[in-house]
Image (cartoon, rainbow, N blue to C red; front, top):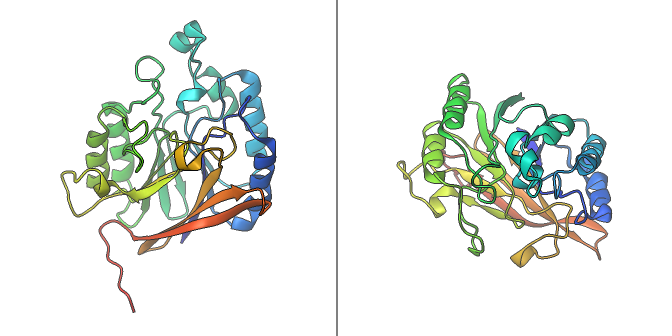
Length: 277
């Protein structure tokens, strides 16, 4: 069994909410996760001081393996020269020296793909063919029994409310490759509200029997929540067994004094079946 704490879109800077951050730090140890995934947008404007604050915050989380990926806000937007010639310098100094990384944790492989695209598709992101080929190689090196998880900031599928529904260019190409390599789950952020479902909900794909569970996280610690999560904060707690994927979606409530679960979702792992007693 593997338990994942999935947070995203911290947005350190003017939109960060210190009280919400403290609430996350209080509940995180009690969740007993095996690994933490933070799926991008650590800062609002990719400034060194914002990255330093994010790094200090991450260091206060439970001492677990940490899977990260940059978001579009983690590269400079208005500092044009920096964006063109050294877009990831601050991210690589304060968060991670690597952009595409494969992590092995217990019985799982996490393939973290940089979807930020500072030169062309800065809002919608992009994952290039060379990145997909590299990801396929990582999965090919593992046994079929390994839990396989993709982490990227941008979304491969539109949200249910369809606000800002444009997905990454070539998203379907990526989904088809992930299905061929029996990826169990995709974790992401960017939308600033949660979406939990299956890739087959929006794209039947080449293989119409083996979809991928998708868990988009809302903004965990900023005031930039959108649509149904406007001015709300959230994270996901994911438990994966040999047969099933359980996702509990948490939101922050002032009257509860912190984060509390608001929904639970259970799926068979892709390609498997659930049998009721």
